Image (cartoon, rainbow, N blue to C red; front, side, top):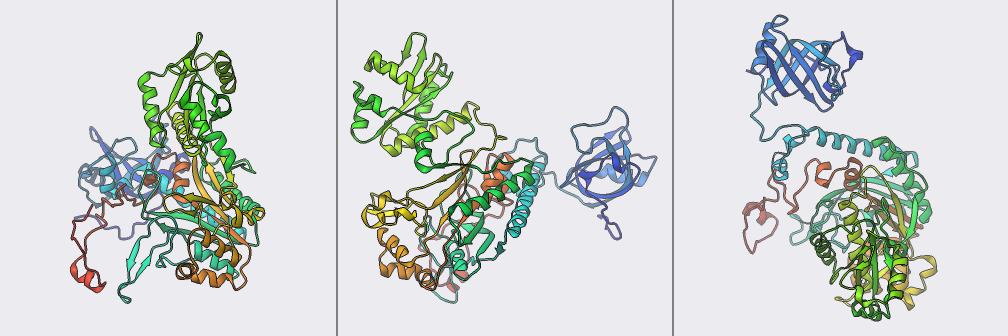
Length: 598
């Protein structure tokens, strides 16, 4: 029978003991990491969320505790009373926080036994993610995951403290709300009391935080759950957490300044890093010109070079035709990488093709000149000009893409990021921020033959571009801003439209007629007519931010109970089928009955 605690009270965590506590009596509780029998003397490594302490059990000191320790196995839950002592000379473990001390146990209680776990509960064992997620309650005992979640707590605490000091009010917004078009598919919840109707889980609190501004709560914040039914990847989950903020009577610089301070406070508190303020800024056009993407990684150079003007008249038709057709020819100089094999270059080509490139031309710069199938198409003068534009030197590898503006930029920009990782140009502990501003307000969707919002339909145009909505909407820029860290967008926001006529014009440009706008957004349009202040805000992806702070490779390592890439929970086996009685109560009839995907 397992022992009962009765009057035992834990005095402190295992992982906080140090030489300062030598001689003190302690009461500790936790899980057995490992047990070692040294010919009578038994050592137990006891673990809790703060770390591990070594317990020493001597049969001469307490035969009963020693006898119990002989029965203990890994992951048993135990409580001990003992005295902190210095480890004997030669046994200090400098790799442990508690490596200078141990606890001489004089009483032990077994609180619970445990089966042998399917994997070792430590940070060194290699375990398949599918097994980790199936036994997530065991995976959560591992030090790395525990440290990630404790850092997440510190970040949330810092955010709330900082925003409270800036006058923000934390106000909750609905989880069961109305389905509105916000870019991704909604998760729908059927209503039992209103048969045939559905709630939607919020993709963001966007409309509600704007309503709070109209209601006079001029600084709102919330650490909130959001839901999007979209294809998943390493840094995306169907349910995720946002640090959500909105401010009234502000313009772009006001929001940016306050949020920079918040991020700086988070980095200082969470990992002790001082962030230089103000952060860098670049326009969307500059980001695409230099890096090909709107979320550039600034930890390394390897910038894109536009060669269109130099090759438009060349004999190489692939380049010349791309420019003649209104496209671009852009290139990267991968310094000192001419030793890459043909197989490695083919792999880079395949990577560029993922983003629409038809191919990837390459040149190895040797002492004799260009080594490449395309070298013969250029005159000596053109080669000199291209080498100068690319700062090409012996040993360099030049990579070219010729395509439309979008494909040339994105494919080469994504390839740049891939090379930064592959060649070790980017360090995880180098934090490079930049704000990206002046995004296009709208873009033309060829399939639906209408404009769509680049961010969302409530984003305000730049003041000087409002007139373009009637004449040339594709050229209008948005009062939008993204914060990018090491190639990842960690936050995005905008100044909102607070004028009902401008909002109606936006809806019209997006092909949303007055009747449809009234049906989908009537409550917002009504609210805008009752004195809406100028306002704007931002949302930070908290999961992605924690992933970067911890240096994790997957967002799943910073969420307590994440979903797989198929949006399933391998531990709880959600989503699962429900019985016919529940479906009838919801007035739902299934066309097919499938098994639970988990």
